[in-house]
Length: 166
Image 1: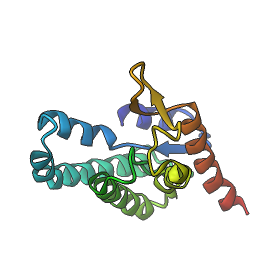
Image 2: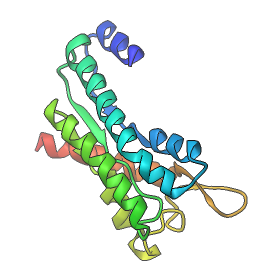
Image 3: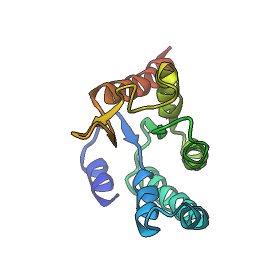
């Protein structure tokens, strides 16, 4: 946040700020719970509350401390497996918090969640099988987007920007 604030204060004409943040908060919860679902679900409300407070601080810094009044696009998180109701529910909650706060600060929402969802339909909702996540040597996938996933997310952000121009 400090880097972004300083950058915006010291660069007179930034064209765009994009934000995609929060997935690591969920990952830390999983690790801290040793991947025990009961523990994760018990800790989720606190993680989501802290996430909302942190995101509110970030947007406040961008708009008021950094005095940035240009476009901000928040990219929502995608799901690794859309057939898993727990994953869908958790990321829907995270994205809802992010979208609400971002919108309050005049940001546009790029819907990475639904972009991945549509792309995974032929693969039964599996982002890995759809080629949207980084493949690991053992055939499973990392949680990060592959080049195809990155391109899809970038296109999603660009669509929001082009819709604003038209």
